Length: 249
Image 1 (tube, helix red, strand yellow):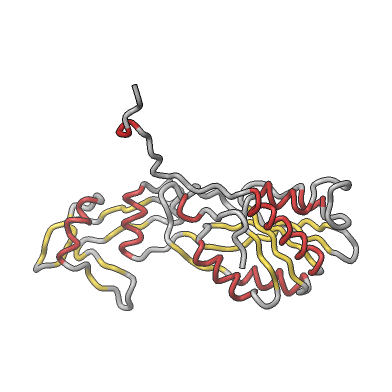
Image 2 (cartoon, rainbow, N blue to C red; image 1 turned 90 degrees about the vertical axis):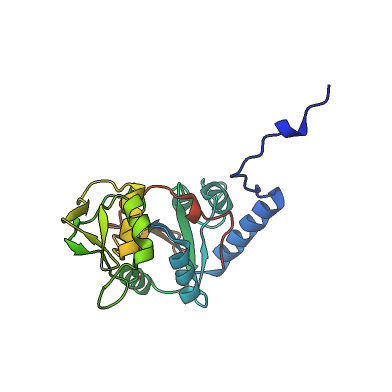
């Protein structure tokens, strides 16, 4: 008896796998850039947001090439042993390509690169699972949004959403208000999805997107230098900001 089509399972999170040809093209692209540029940097991203990473790519598009894809593919392209390395000494950097890291090729001098990435920091909204960076207490009275300056109260039609997210609001002359102060989150404690959503609605940014440089390879000497003091706090993985293989511009 043939199987019913109704019994077919369809994954709602199905993602097309990269073909062997696409991975091969990425490996070739990485190796060509390895031959072209003077320095290769390994970096990690804190509070990963694709929007901010695209900004970094745009600002460096004329003086660098950035790859942020599958770590195994990038490591294979550069070679993780002296026998497999694509250029002298780069296997010492390739062995460190694990997890969510990226590679930056450039001719810019180290001091310039270090200074630029130290300055580039973009505040953003926290996500569920992040630890609150500070305690936020909503005062008695109108619930305010801080997206504008000065802050303005929420419109009446958003009151049901505020209640759904855990606020005991009431309507005071058409404005969602609180009878008593409400502790939205406490410093150091993980945020729930409701807390994260409320923080976004009121305009409180608690995380900072930044790029931490891990190590640097030099084509002239073949040496790899470790960059100290660049550790980043752990952040919950979020599917919406996962980069695809070979994501570069």
